[in-house]
Image (cartoon, rainbow, N blue to C red; front, top):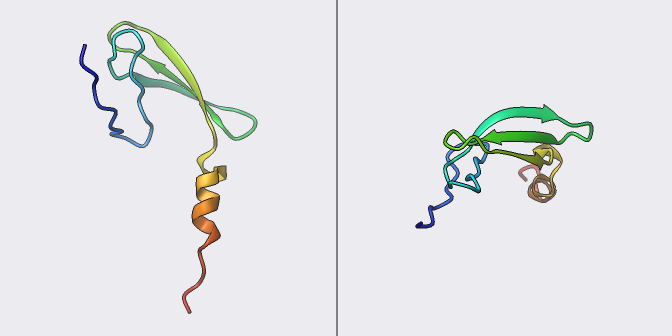
Length: 74
């Protein structure tokens, strides 16, 4: 089977199913105590279920790195 490109089309990345390689759909989002999210994805073709934990994007390293060099205009 040819490898399909992984191009994110939305703000929430939809992983490919491990069984049939179809794009999975987001079924549920559950907030966790530490500010992260537990995301549950379901495959529309073979009914496989996959869960992932995603860190809070506002507390990530990327945001800290991007805002570290922000200064008011002179």
